[in-house]
Length: 315
Length: 300
Image (cartoon, chains in turn brown, green):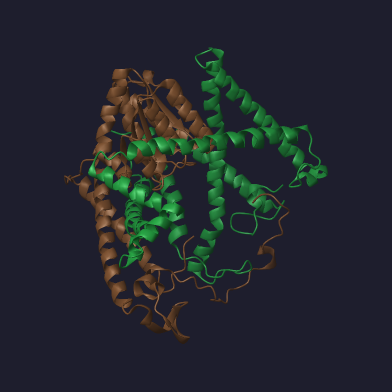
């Protein structure tokens, strides 16, 4: 829920809006025909190699969407990457297997993969069972996918999306059948497991750069460059924060204050207190005031509009 | 049992039990829903995209307002809004539960599609006696048996005479409760735990491959991991600490302090850096979806 911005905390919103502007500005810049540079990402270059290898071996390409329980931005990005993989596989007439842990994701994924086959003029080769729902329980999903990898002897495995403790089970199982593996998790806690077990890993925002890198659509490339501008802005803010906090916190424990910011104004302290990190100007600007004790004289609702006693159920 | 639109407290989105207002709202909701579906299905191809774009934008706009619009401070259940900005913030906060319920309802409809997918794949395998069809048979039998026992247990617990059953161990349990307990707690939970325990063995094999000093990066990883692991071994840490005690500023050379320094000054900043990148990427992706700038399908 949005916070109440009395006269602080607004800077967080301002920074968000600046970032939105930077991304949109670059999208329109790229749309105008401006040629923008993207660095090489080896994990994405390996997709063609992995699918080609699967074709040579005559084994399927496995794609796993992780445990997303809904169609969100992470899942859509993973589906975008898988659409590209499916397109390459379709051109080589290579079988694919897409595993989903959520029925909503399954529906969207089936539509996207079917579209890909139709765009390639290979609609008749699309197998509706190639996109499967496995289970929405974490380890039942892990067991199901691991079983599929072992039985089908996948030659290439792509793990993209939200992965948790099951990441290593999947990656090690694919490794045991000699599959070439390309992985990415939006959960930083799982990236080390993928790095340890997989051949190629998309780390952090490389995952979100994937569709721009693979398709070179102007909108996506512009968005990617906008993201880089945002990162530069954040680096600038970190440097500004480092300098201003260092100046304000100089003197260590001897640096005391007599007033502290509370509920939108400075209040006198009963006795001088230590200057803490939360007292710095930047911290005050970035942290919205909870304003717990503020009271307002609001009009009261008429009795018929008042909350009713629930007889249970319904929420 | 109350209906979806009878939630309390009273807001724009609900109405008193059995009132005509409630029935009118349910009717309007149904008509709008059916009209939307019908409109989308019969609309000419060139209008479908604008409709989808508009619905996506309006849906996204709600959450943009929800997270960015100032929330009412210390709102009491009896409070009315003081002015227009507060009316908007009251409306937005009241609507959140309803909007998220819409998502849940759509997801609930789609679970049927998931089961259909499972049934289609595995039933086909059993009927055609394809390779490993026995596993598919086990899955289908488990699915049906679990549903039967789960629902039987659920309905029996709803009966007034069985009200004591909830949370009271085995009191009043019948065949259905014991059956559900055996299937859920006795089998499913244990199989989950067994799968999770496999991670321990996989960590060993993955770490063995990752920690081979094949490159400078892998060697740095190996040494760092070794320091962190040794710092967690009490005996090693004790003797190491005794060994470095005579050195000037020995605290800096204690394994626990080196490991803490690595965690605080190397690992945390790296994770924050990745988090920043992921956060910005997520925001850009969300923005593209919200404004319908994203074209799925891996166009090439």
